[in-house]
Length: 310
Image 1 (cartoon, rainbow, N blue to C red):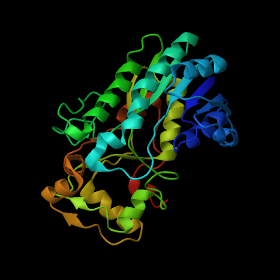
Image 2: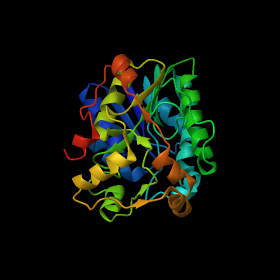
Image 3: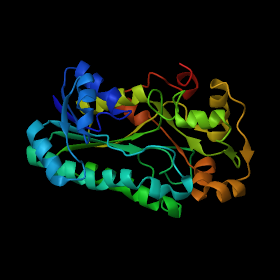
Image 4: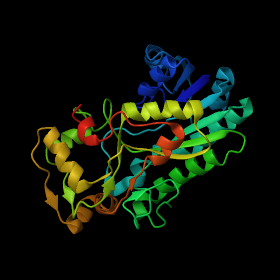
């Protein structure tokens, strides 16, 4: 098929594009920067340049490519996140989840795109009650922290807009926390460095349950969604959701670092804000059963325990 990947040079896009090409698809990689044309070519795709927040630019590129499938992997995350100002640091990404999603959908509808695959997130958006591991049918958080409301609203927007597009097969992939090459949990990544410096403490009981996925496995799942995904939402996570109190010390060992410090919840909230305290103590993980059942996808790295040291 002819596939347009928006966000072709990001951590996931750079893993996804070569896999789509290897699978026999004709791929165009969309980037905002003309300077990244050669990067897209090296990945095996035809580069197209457009500002995803400019509806005319997006319409022009989509009309030129005339794809059968659009894959929306656009984010704007760089540098360290200030958890106290969560929505502020996600503001640019949230515009891509709202405005850019709408522009890509409108342009895709105009050319008759058969399938539209978009990125979402599994983990902190789930309701912080009930089971520790959630499925796609479980509700999102009805009462997010004030600093996270805008970001959760943007996640709801992309999910609702894509799955609600009756004219195409709208597929949403809720990825777990990425690790592997080009991510913050790569050995040379930002969060790995924070763990080495003991600047990533366990807050409170560390009972917040996180789900991870290796970046290569996320790309494989996306190929499966491109080829035969059906309308709906899929959690793309590994087989082992784990509390912070389990995974953070284990990652520290794998990195050759000292054990993480521990701080009480009240102090973590005071120093880093309510969002950080919630993510450390209350969030829920995700089940990958639906992705296995309907996409035929299984993670090549079933657990972050082996994957992070592979």
